[in-house]
Image (tube, rainbow, N blue to C red; front, side):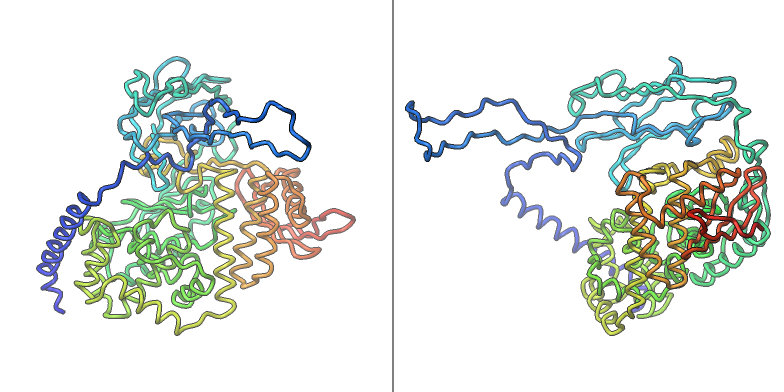
Length: 591
């Protein structure tokens, strides 16, 4: 049907939606149920109420040995909802993991907020050594349902050394009564050590923003980082990635794009708004697909030019489709067919309405494969018009909005289009490698996020602070984008994750699976290294540390290994060849 008629059709369809909503509302009046109990959430604490134990009536005579006494009746514990509260696990100070004198400290507060409370009604006050340094209200809940507040660069530590007292109070005037029955758990006080400025790592001393220009972009990197060291090659990669993104969505940038290359992993390795932030580190444990991440995030910038209200499911699907894969080049239909085969397919309506809470790789794969199917049906221009027109304002739910617009632009409902798509997938059976690659990829990233939540929670995508990069450059610390946790357990597991990524790219699925087994054993044992393979990785990390080097990449293969390490003073790379002799790893070549 001609696209010019779609606006009229859409208006009529919206009237139909309103009619159905009125009809459903009328039915609900007659079929109303008793009030449901409040949703206490999965984190509600079950507290047993003190109740007298019922005593059964029994004869006063002593029973014979064969007699059976009636059971003692125990009351069923009643779940008591948690009220507004905060503990030390809900407070992060940036830069992480340590503070040096002269740092501008950002506070992130992640309290427990009952569903019945509006986060915007909760006041937060932060004091340092008894002096208020920040205040405000909580922001809306994130995709995981967590309310939070971020106070950027609120505490200037210039001139401070030693332990400082930080106090955080929720609802300091006790204005909230319902949902905050126990104000005593609204406050935490912690001691924060501010280290001397002279203790800063060598790469942070004198660190400064460096800017480079290409045809498409202005690239920002920090001196002393991997991105700064590799900047000449990165400029070419970025230019090619932007060209691919522009060609795929047939849209050119309407301005020069600002790209920030940062020296720590946040979430999946990048995020974009008006500017783009991309992780570029030597120990890239979240996958080495820099080119793919660049194309993906560029599409997010470009599509806002023609579809500023596009919905998440379609936006992420378009970005993966335009990239030609999520983390590496991928055959999207075959990969989606593999998802069907392993029984982890998520129905589209469910996925569209709850995209980010779904398993990350499954959601992105399904969205991309469905986008490709739509484009193949009637071409890019029809899809672009559909994509631009689907907004959250179209219907009560996002899946209903997609359904409405599919009928307008493709003449099919969401259910009909999904059925046709699934039929096409079933006609393209996946290979054993397709299935193995997908299964190991899902496990890899699930374990990676488990690692982040346990050992680097500020990198986990649902709780990570994603600062606006221009503000970091103008007002914040370079350390917000470079400082990271570098304990032995972090380095060990990160180099192992990187080995998994390498094995996947080489289609060595057995090796990838063995590595994941070893990583999982370490996570299951609270970081204890009990696995022989993990012990080999750990020993190589320890040998590097004993020589003042930090392991970035390690590949163990039988009795031989290759390691890439950095020199802290200048971030230059050193390559080792090692062999296992006499119950230890010996360096045989040092380049």
